[in-house]
Length: 166
Length: 181
Image 1 (cartoon, rainbow over the protein chains, first blue to last red):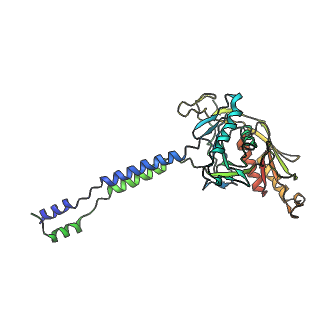
Image 2: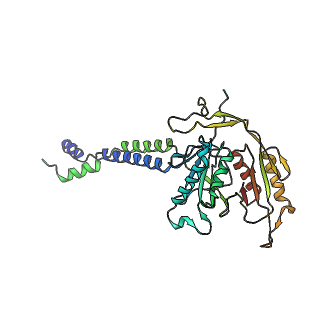
């Protein structure tokens, strides 16, 4: 009797290994997906503000310009405007904005009444406003035509207490 | 010898699936989602620019504005955001310049002709203007009275954080139209 029960249990054994493999595959999948979705976002500390709009459903093909602390602009993971080369900076900015506008592929992205846009501008909280102003002025150029700009903010101040000076 | 069907049924009823691996996987996923750093864009502030205009004039028609200036008293000293890194050098891992924070960065504000030494004074002044009945302006086109639009004008030395705080203060006071120069 016991042998028969033991035999039956052996036949009914459920192997969990494939399920565990599926779990690990899902984890790898979500890791890669999250990394790709954050490609446009540089590691910046955004300023905190209380009165702003949530960015829950961003428009498709919205250009994201990341302004670093030295005024350089990163777009899609690479530095496109290098402020260390002051002579070329303005030309690079205009070229970048032109490319952003060309990347807006469908007519829905370019509305006749309000021009191209929006463009999301992300800048570090300690970035000088002059760098942001130059980008805004570039966006308002007639040949560029971005009228709707969105400034990225944070709901919480993520900057910890400043490190003690050396 | 094949056991009788009745015994097999009894064995199935007594069979218990070991849930330990599933629980381990659940804990692994919990750890994964807790530790992962989601750089999610939290919020945005829309700003509208005029069409076909090379200058940054944000208002479509001449209207009396309430100008809030940000004047920098002391730009401050740059301190490495991660102590030990030096300004001007590039991070080998990311190719980006090392980040810094400003220590000792001081600004004051001017609401029209009135000087505000700090953010609290700015908020108080903006609230006073908002509550002042004389501040309302008659819009000739619509015939309605409304508060004047606020134009934030950061001067040399102001940083993005200063502008964000001023816009926050302006909106907290109840002004609806805010532009940035």
